[in-house]
Amino acid sequence: MDTGTFLALGIMVGVMFAAWFLSRKANKNEYEYDEMQLKIRARGYQIGFYTALMLMLALILLWELGWLTFATPGLAVFAALLISVTVFAVYCILNDAFLSIRGKANRYYGIFGLILAIEGLVCVRRISEGKILEDGKFTFDSGVPVVMFICYLIILITLIVKTVCKREAEE
Image (cartoon, rainbow, N blue to C red; front, side):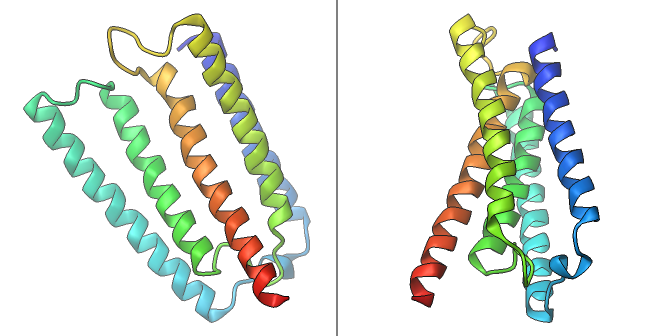
């Protein structure tokens, strides 16, 4: 991995740590889920797990058949795991179980927006340097920012659309 990838990963880990730390400082009642939300989240975990399982099996099949030519195996596994997390998040958002009872989406807009900005800048840099593909494949260095950008963008768009639809329904 080059220094740009390490920088992007370091910033991402720092943002995630800061979000975790700030959430611990906040009011504990703000992060409580009701029984229905907990059931929906459990179902979301199950769907995410089975998504990861099916994607891993598909990757094994693609690798063994020699058809995994667009990405390195490490990137493909990372993408499969991140896709399963995205499936969980989208399922919970669509079923009103992503945010807690008193949770506010604004906090997530900021965190996801920051991650999108960082990963987007890394993607633009990779493209401008001509390093997005190496030997005709996405490598871990070049593919992680792209996969993260796409997955976080899907989650953020889903959260925004759900919040807007919820506000319109309340009015």
